[in-house]
Length: 252
Image: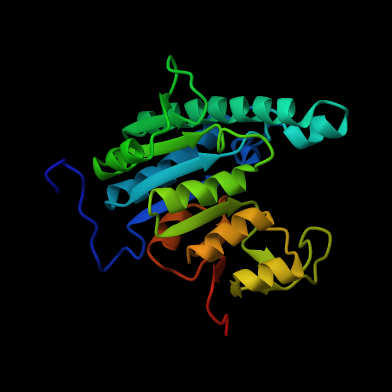
């Protein structure tokens, strides 16, 4: 234990000691068509709790697509900036739901918002976020970047760089990055490793180009993996070859 009572990671069992976990809003749907499934939230929370118990410092960025999508609203005529701000508020709602699930699992958690709403979340201040992590608290970073026209993928990359995370872990519904949609194309090939340049050149639909470029400029590895399988967050954190690893090096 550290002086703060935070478990000290075992170097032999942990590859990444500070992680940024990116969850889509749809990840919180579970079996529902809309909103948040408390049962699936609890499933995610238990996975995060297991990693936290290993002494890993965890930041989380969650999307809002299960509640509202700014781009979809803009396509139907709403002002894009207005739609994006509504989407940011949706991420705060998801963050609060995830905080509740994490604290029920016994994990101290703080929600920090890029848009001021002091009654429900702390304002995002980078140094304070890092201090929460050092004290063993999971930090949920909500409201995106606080600016319209930026996706939550870009917010995740930005926050990961700011808090000096060692990896950006993107949880999805599939087990990695494919050269085509594996749902509609059963012959799609999964990649074990890719480079940032591969993602940008081939326009693989993993993260938007702004997020990928930010990771590339700061040499931040990305792991894309299947959230639905129990213990996958722990396995990625331990360095197991789960999903697709994206780095700046030669994928071979």
